[in-house]
Image (tube, rainbow, N blue to C red):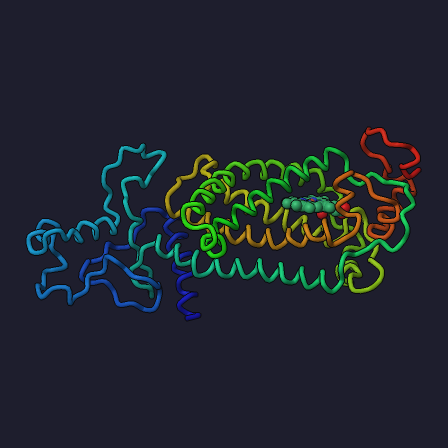
Length: 390
Ligand code: HEM
């Protein structure tokens, strides 16, 4: 089973990867009667395979559609076999926009050690047997781990008493960028989860019609939220990159796990090493992959030939990267809401109390106290008594 699954993955990557890279370098068209024996590669059925026992006629497999219709009226399997072999028919769609419009079914391909297979079917197998179960499992594991952490530790509270003196942590511009991105992310996450996993937990509850309309709506929402997410992600990147550059003390912070298991948090600058990991891993690295693959799926990148194989590769890359991104940001959202007292307030109002700043970002607080960083960065008027005097 394990080997079979690995083979499917390799086939799918091979099929889509190679087909995508050197598009029409199709393997030799299969002789209909000589479908190779299965070597345990692909699961599911090859509907075009001719079974020798189907007829006593030795030329059965070579029959044309006309010949077959004479001996078996209504049986047009030879035509469908041709379609499956990639025979291109006529389509009124412009070739530049739909290069494969004349191909009703993605051509069959065969790679060494695997049986003759349909690339679309191989992709479907990867989606249904790998991406959906393992992706879903990862998200559930992360949710479970967060729930256990919350049950064990509860909300991380500020130990000292608030002084009432505030430091501006995020300017209105930073907050607008962040919340635009977060809202788009939630829309994308929810719609993505419903499209990928909804048939397991929503379809049985709401039935086919409602579920169909819901996914139709969410799919369109997903397509529009994607570009909003992409633009706000770029703004977020440039807004926060400076304070996410590695600094002395980050490694120590990581080695001590931020002090999460002890009473005292390890001192950090404006953003701690955990936040920096999310920034570089989630916002930057996964962000680029998620956005680029999403743009391919939306057919927004000029100059690309949008064949089935292109979309299949983009889909698999998108699914893996988005699941990892969601897993990462579930942790971020937890710490940013119920996980840590005062964090959400900072992103909502823009201000944190100096006690919060000292406890969670001590080096940053020291810099503000020393006047190296202004306590009030935006030109917004705030009651002087409320703002820490740097
Ligand atoms: C509902 C979803 C979200 C919530 C509730 C949330 C909450 C927060 C909070 C409270 C902070 C301030 C943390 C601090 O003071 O150190 C923050 C910072 C930040 N958030 Fe979010 N966030 C959400 C989604 C996102 C998403 C989707 C992204 C990007 C893809 C993101 C990127 C950032 C960045 C870059 C920062 C600055 C800290 C850093 O650079 O690591 N957030 N968020």
